[in-house]
Amino acid sequence: MASACAAEPPAAGTPTPAGTQETSAAAGTPAASAAGDVKTSPNVEHVAHIPRAAPLNGEADFNTDLAFQGDYAYVGNFGGFAIYDISDPTKPQVVSQVSCPAQQNDVTVHENLLILSIDEPRGGPECDSGEGRRSWEGLRIFDISDKKSPEYVGAVQTECGSHTHTMVPAGESLYVYVSSPGPEPDSETCPAPHELIQIVEVPMKSPEKAKVVAKPDIFPERQHSEFASGCHDITAYPEKKLAAAACFGDGVLLDIADPVKPKVLQQLTDTENFQIWHSATFNNDGTKVVFSDELGGGGQATCDTNTPATKGANAVYDLVGGKLEKRGYFKIPRVQQEDENCVAHNGSLVPVKGKDIMVQAWYQGGVSIWDFTDSAAPKEIGFFERGPHPEGGIAGSWSAYYYNGYIYSSDILEGLDVLKITDPLTDPAGQVKMDDFNVQTQKSY
Image 1 (cartoon, rainbow, N blue to C red):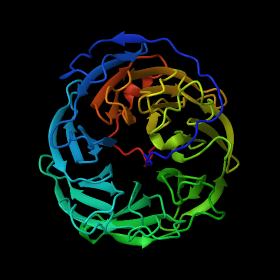
Image 2: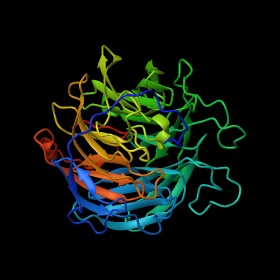
Image 3: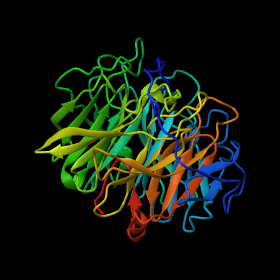
Image 4: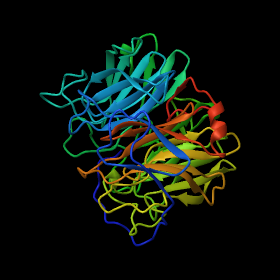
């Protein structure tokens, strides 16, 4: 999520409401939601809810991104990260919680390593280095061989920190693409110019020796965002030798046959409909890319009657003859209130062969499951959401991903939610079993 950027709402356009059903509590829910009852479509069940807990439940300890490995879910948090046992998805259990404060603490896992993105100047790379001169930001690396006691093993400083990162495994090395906004005037950690991404090599046998090995400038033409340069998110599809980068002012299609030397295949610009190119998702065949726009930076109510359906939404592009061509848009059809921050955010494919289906977080707009098999006419097929959070401000689902039969939602203030969709379109996904899952490193199913 980008920092909440002030922006005036665009001209009027009216989403249409969809049918809902209300549930007062979910089966297996250890604690009630602070935001009251939840609403779901008839085909979605709220099967579990685990609130944030100390030491990761302070006022500023927002839950962030998710990653999965075997029977474990990893949840980033501005205060650190948590590991959950999800061997029974209806009854997740906390295995450990690590206090390691920093924005943004987006998380990925690979073999015995866990990596956190740090997008905030800190006093140093260690978890307890918050005081003193704030002159470090970048990646922190942990050994998670012992899930009950993760061990900090090292860090890599990067320019403008790391807002998000993307793993590209390559034998005994793990390459990590670092995305970060910038530059920041008079900053020690984020100097101008910043028209680049950074690539970190992590030797799997000696992760403490990780270092930056490349700083490619992937912008053949200057970006058009007034907010920042650099990229927000990069999704790699190593099997297809492709990556799609959402870079604030632009979308970029990359050839990553050589992971250290990505080549620009195409640069997209849409100043009419997109404000912040936030993230990208390939379909399973690698013939489409969904780019999302985080209008307002995540802090505004853009799912209201004053914001057109093409803004703060998803744009569906078909890959034709090696070039991306825009086909359609998707935005949740349920009108949100003026005090509910809502915009397209993190999501993943629901693995159904022959179909293009995605689950996605929309902050206080909740979680949406939508079908873009027809690129020009995508449609919602299921949803989950809470009412406005009583404390106001930024709240709601940060990330919502499908993993081995269930949808997991990392709610900023509420904690971890587990959902089950039962629908003829999505039921085949239950037959797909993944050993691990990092949403920005796609694998075919």
